Each structure stands twice: as C-alpha cells, then as structure tokens.
Image (cartoon, rainbow, N blue to C red):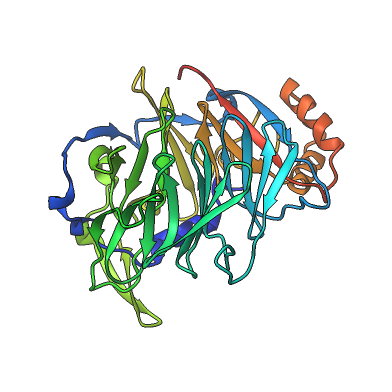
Length: 390
C-alpha cells in the first residue's frame, strides 16, 4: 500500500482561498520559525527500522455495543482512546477495554445529524455537527451537558482549554477561524476573512504539539499560526521546501458544478499534515513534480537538524512485515510516537503473503496477536515508537 490513501488528495482539488487574503491587522504578533525540508539532500528512509525501534499493538474490545467500521478519527489522552467511526464516538481505556459510546443521531437539541469532527479537553468532549450548525458538549464520562448553536458551519474543531474551542468553518462569507467560549457564547474571536471570489473554501484542520500548543494553517499556505490561551494568534512556523514551494502565480481556477475551484498548475508541495513532538517535526505531503502517485513523509530532528524522507514508492516496513503505511490517514503524534489503526483483515492477508520471508522478533510478537484476532473484530491500535534521537 501507499503511505497515504487517495482521500488525502481531496483538499488539494476542492476549492480554497488565496493564502494572501489573511487579515494582517487581526494578527497581534509576527513571529516565525523556518523549518527547512530539502527534498533532494534529505536522508532517504528505505526501512521503517531506520526511524522506529519498535511497534506495539492495542486490541480494541469487540462487544454488542462496540462494533467499529472504518475509523474516521483517533485521539488519545492519558486515560482514554477515542475512536470516531460510523457516526458514533467510541471510548476505550488505554488498554483497549470498552467504556462507552456516544450515539445520539437525530434532530433534537441534544442530538446530531452527523459527527463531522470531535475534540477533547481535560474535562470535556466536543462534537461538531456541520449540517445542523451546532456543537454538542459532553463530560469526559459521556454525559450530555449542552448544545451550542452557531451561525457558521463548524467542520473542524479543537479545544484550546476547558472553556474555549477553535472552529475551522466552511461557507462563503464571514471568517474561517473562530474561537468560541463555551461558557460565554457571545464571546467570539475571529480571524481570516473568506474571499468572496471563490465559492468553495476549504476549512483547515488543527494540530497540537507534544507540549499542548495549538496550531492552524490556511489553504495554500506554508505558514502555521499558534493559537494562544487568550485567543490571540501569532505566526509560529514557516515550512520551507525550497524550489518546490508553491507560488500564487502557479494557481489557476476551474469551474466545477458552479463552484470556482483553485488548484496548483505546477504540482508543487501540497502539505497534507504537520505534526510536532518533543524531538521531531513531521510533515506529510504530496508533490506531483516528483511523483504523480507517490506521497511523502519528512522528519526533521530538533537536535541534529537532520531531515529524513520516506517515499511511498520505495518505503518498506521491516518491523511488522505488513504491507501497510507507517502513518495512516487519521494518524497523529502522542507521547512522541505515531498512533494509527490497523484492520485485522488487512494484516492477516499481508502475513499470509510473506510467510516464506525471514522474520524479525517484532514480526513474531505481532503474528501471535494477529493469529488470535478474527477479521470481524474491531481494529487494532498500532503505536510506532520513534527513535529518541535521529
């Protein structure tokens, strides 16, 4: 399999706004750290063992209340594993034991039509229902607390703290980024005006660093903004890919179904996801100038400033011996490790195909777990332990 699924190509071709349309008068500070990712001189990672020293698995319990399909999003904190699947939010303890599920489909004030996104804070769980234009608030043990109705379409959300959440909204007018106080709903801070020339802007997802900092990026931009506790934002990171950086002059417009869609005509680097741990920066991207099919992961060491690149066309997983990408589409960094999901059926097929190859210790340990899991059981959480120094 490729490192990424094709679903990640969607943000690149579904409409967006120019990065130059940010309201600079709204930005209270102007601080930026450049992180250089040299695609040509970086160390080429051929084997997973070059950057990870081990892999561990957590089997999610399967019972009549907990039957998971495809996983849409995965989050972890010190107590729980949160899995969004089949329009329900399943919650497990960190060992994979089932705790409860939030499943309240409907049109009532305490129900949702669809969970488009969710986030967690120290004390709460927040669900975003874009179609109903509302956010549902639950306690960390799954008890409904309140519903916040909005004038925007909240597509992606992230908690800033127990009171304030950040909302990345879609629509054709207003602001893209809004900070909402859940205790004082009239207290709003908003940034980045929509461009009316383009009728299909992309809401952007958030990232959270290992030290709990929250970041946000606009479409067609290499700049990440840090969202501060008081609701102000500041420029934090500029991701520099040298000659592969996109240029505004390379953007063109197509019309699809009455929507004006922006796209990059040159196939420069398109950032899909950016993560930060205490040791590394990690960026996932595609670059059609290098490979129309291949997609890439780059790691930058904070200590040595060395960079490493994984190419989906040549990468091999020599720890698990499974034909699976190291970072699934819903992966994230937690405690300096990559967290993702493996489906039993996929692994069982891969293991069957490699039975005649030499096996590692990791393979033997994982094979014992996989052999006891049927294809009908819930997915397995896969934790890739990144080497402490790169």
